[in-house]
Length: 372
Image (cartoon, rainbow, N blue to C red; front, side):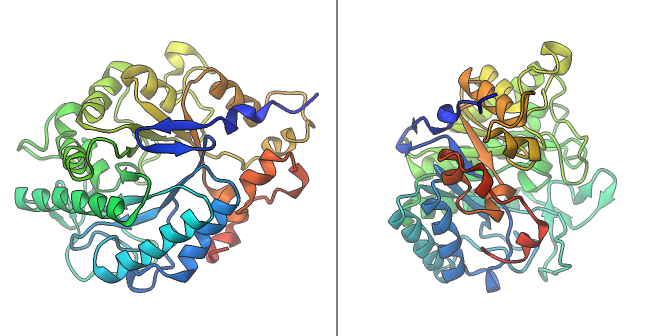
């Protein structure tokens, strides 16, 4: 059989001031190669290569706001301070020189632990001093701490716009700080930042979004990354039903989010199979249906052999690529993010566009050991 028609992946997309040549996003992926948190020439070249390779929108690795213990590994880049921001200025200059568009992902790692055992030297912070349900780690944030964190997110977003980035993404997923407020298992607060409902526990995120919108103005697009699953518990779910999902997401869209970046481990898995079946809407699909906001889907794109073979028309059965094209043709979501496949192959998008299946490089974990 012939390969699926991939033209749907290469339609332009526009939201507010952001104009993209295609629907493919480079997902934010922690790399940890910034000495003392300062990005430099290696990061500029790394992101520039993805722009040269045809990525529609590049989202940076997580880069942290100006709070004590906002990062959990030494090599995570900062998005504050004169030296770090000068480094990011060089990054966006390199990406723009290659014709690319890019936004930083601004982040606070909360009470999570890094993979390298690095100690930030000050206590980590979270809503209730918990790493996971029943697992104490660090200290609970005061209301003053919370206000300072909100302001730090807003300053980082304002700096992103000032430096010339095309958008900004707030990291609210995967069990990090904002997500720890969402999750009942790590938010046991009895003040206005806690509560029995997801809407109540979303207050902190809503204040962050509101402050970021005020900092960047009305035309600058804001992306918010979200997930049901946590690194602490892959089975965790914040919203068990569409009604609860709407209760969670709609206030955040109302606060100023333009694009919901809906992280799931496999993009083809339905969010509520009990409602619309095994081929039902995924997380990004439901988020778009419930809120009307634009959405990015993500999860294991380009990692399977079947996915790669489909570009050459080698498979007569349904593949991940078939499924992606079908979902995008029906506008289930607006953009698709690619992660590990782009770590291994900066030219992944160009090769897909040109139908060069034989030249696609498969992901190898060794690629995580260097910036290629």
